[in-house]
Each structure stands twice: as C-alpha cells, then as structure tokens.
Length: 224
Image 1 (cartoon, helix red, strand yellow):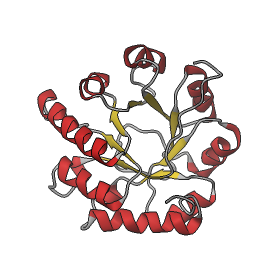
Image 2 (cartoon, rainbow, N blue to C red):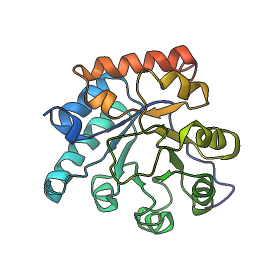
Image 3 (cartoon, rainbow, N blue to C red):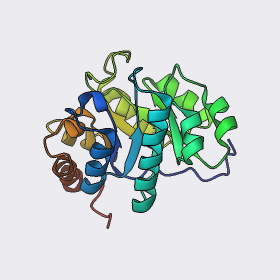
Image 4 (cartoon, one colour):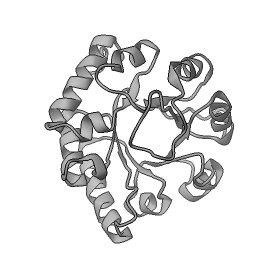
C-alpha cells in the first residue's frame, strides 16, 4: 500500500452486521432496513448459513446495495469478494483464515475498502503491512455469534490498538448495552453489537438507544 495514500476513514457510530440466524425469524432485508432507520454508520452483509444459495445471497446483496446507496451508508460484504464485485459494494471484510488482504486487493482494485478481523497485536501489525483499510478488534468479550472465533481478547488488546495502531478500527464481540460505555471509555468510536441489535424486538429503537450511549460518551457528539 502506498504510504502517501490517505487512509480511508471508518465512520464513527454503530457498525451494523446482518445475522439472520439471530434475527428472530425476520428477513435480512427487513433487519437491514430497520438498522438503517435507526441510524447505523456502516452495514456489513454476513451470511454464514450453508443452506442459503449463492443466488439468494446475490439477490440480498443487490437489495442492500440499493438501500445503502440511497442512504449514503458504506456497504461491506463479509468474505465474498465475488458478491462484492457483482453488486459494486464499497468493500469486503475478511478473517484471518480467509483470502489474504493482498489477494483481495488484487481482485478489488485500489479504491474499495478492505477490513480484516484481528485478535492480537501481531495481527494488527500484520494488517497494517498488508494494506488493510481498517481492522476488527475483538472479540472484546465472549460472543455466541461466531463459533470458530478465539477466546475473548479483552480490553487490553483494544487499548493496544488505540495507542499503537494507525488503522481505523471497529470494536466487536460480546458488546452489549451494559458494557458499551466501558468499551467507549477505552477509545472505541466505531462499535459493532450483533445480537443486541438483530435480536431486539424493535431494531431501529435499539440502534437509536445505542447511538445515544455513544453520543453521551463522546464519539458522535460532533456528528450532525
């Protein structure tokens, strides 16, 4: 990555992720519309169920791309570079065991966003060297939404990223309404809460409530 190239900025606020498995029978599109209505800053499409066909996923991505384009929200596709290209998504998020960032960059080109999940200082440093545009930091706390993830990294790793990593980041993993203020106090300005949002009875209201916590804590206080 060109060291003189300005780094893309991850918007502060709530980073929304679709998770149909935890959405209480509601469709991905219904959940996404509600998250957008509540004021999420970023939307990521994440579909981990093997039963869903590629065509169904493509249809959902196309609908979500239209929704995010209308509202000006960055649209990220988890793992599936092909789907991201087909719908002209803003970027892709990959994990440590997915395609390497350099290969994803080769496929996506220089202008799309690449996010990388990280779980340690070494992985954060590697993400910088690989040319990731932002990193996921977590799981901060224990989480049920990713069965193959490592043990919680706690707030110590978040502190390391805040003090030592130049990349924008999203804090993720086991974050709920009750511990969100603590995560924000440790320096997170973009946060992801999956089940606390997609599993809520009123998703839009849940997002608004979480945004209020962020606003009270500071990171959104200067945002319009």
